[in-house]
Image (cartoon, rainbow, N blue to C red; front, side):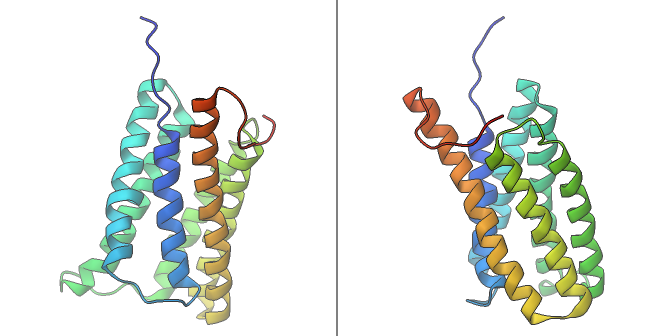
Length: 186
């Protein structure tokens, strides 16, 4: 069987990118957490990336499966961490505990970054900037520094924008059968 399968990466990258930008506009201090961010975290950041990860499984892409399923589940877990206390089902997570959560995600992302060595430069940038973002957010929660949080917010906007760029470059380049938006050498 030699069936051509669609590339699910743009779906996962858009879910990640758009949700990351929206959350980090909050982290940069522009507006508070709202239902909009939580809904994006559940639906597009969470479910869409999980769907993309399952589709990557079908394509035999271990890196894609691991990345999209992990970050999709990250978004779901983050929303649960924020919503459970509001529903009276759990205590709010102290900032120090959140710092460890974010630090572990940073370590995971650093290892994923090492896996991008043979991928295009834009994909490497997405993972490098996400690694920095997780470490900045952990530093914010370890120190309580609003300034580090604001810096993380702006860095997260850049990270999310790079994922959106990669998603759109992938779609447009495939649709036009040529490089419309460059993604860098492999």
